[in-house]
Amino acid sequence: MKEANVYPLSALDGELSRRFHDAAEVPFDADWVGVVRRAAAEFAPTPSRPRRTLLRALATAAVLAAVVGTASPALGLDRIFLDFLRADRAPEKVQVDFGTFDALDPVRGPGVATAETRTVHTFHVESGDYDLSVSPANDGFCWGFSGFGMTCETSRSRPIDPFYRDIPQAGQVAEPALITGAVRSVDLGRVTITFENGDTVDLPLVIVSEPIGASFFFYDVPEDRWKLGSRPARVAAYDSAGVELGTAPLMYTSAR
Amino acid sequence: MSIAAHRIEDVYRRRHQAFGNAVACLTGNRDSAVDVVQEAFARALARREQFRGDGSLEAWIWRIAIRTALEQSGRPADLPFEELADPGFADPQRDPELAAAVRKLPPRRRLIVFLRYVGDLSYTDIAHVCGVSEGTIAATLTQARAVLADELGRDQTSQTSTGRNVR
Image (cartoon, rainbow over all chains, first blue to last red; front, side, top):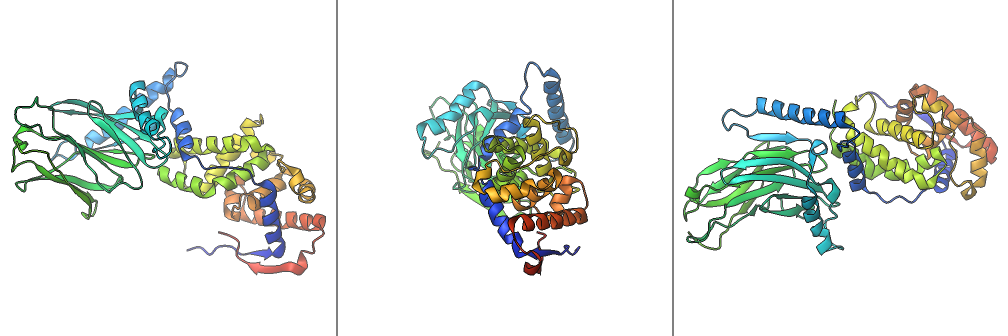
């Protein structure tokens, strides 16, 4: 390792450092979300910059094409990496929905940057299409799926805390049984669901870059997995070395 | 070389105050300093693919910040900024003696002094920011200290010791 140069240091340095600091200090409260908001605006499409919009779309397409090209052959498309700053801004209704987190609790709310809410990906599954939207917040981020719900992950969140819909009871109008979640890591090895009969399945992951910095999973529980004894029992996340980062049980209000 | 956004966030959280203080000296405007720093970090975050890694990340962001400050001051940003900046304390009345002493330095030397004593930059980072050698920075600061010591009525030679001040 290169040795750092040594320069004479005088007592005058100490005095200068102190006096310069005192004379120059400006009030400045950190506002990282504000920085992110401005950075996101760099990529915001405007009528006066159609070419930029086109370039952004092409860049996104290139990323997706590259990912498709390197997907695991065993599972098809098992993970997608997405740059948050290049994702499309979410529809206004979604932004408003995300704003309710703070509207309901202005003091302890997460401080969602609602205007920067992005719809980053659409999951196409058996029961329909679900748009994943995410938004940075002062503490963590908020996320949700269209037609399903939304939640927030903060520094106090558990490593993995699935957000899921109960298995429909027999005789009910069957709404899709969905299991979703976010893990605050972009370097996950895998997320698995273990069923009551011991079977396991690896879930595809959508990994969203900073300022979100998280991996999202989505599982549409097939009807043959709705019966007691074969239902999803727990979800677990593992890092790239195979170490379990967290696990959470899945519980249901009734047996089908 | 592309860097992760969280590294920029780390620099921001540790150093935003130093950036704000130094930018206020570059623009002479305390009110706009925070805005300049916010804009500079936003540009760094949005264009992080452009960081080549030939200096520290922080030095790269400092260059962006200084360019942004000059832009917002209405100065041309496409010329070497060390030739353009005319830094000074935004509020000289806080320490009139020091403000007057600093004014005795030529603008380029003043810029380096502010980066060192307000921005707390290492010699290495100042060299990267200004695009000159580390030795040039050391020599410039030695000369600047001599002027400031003289203006402030300090005897610099009697106080000299040896220390490592490159972070």
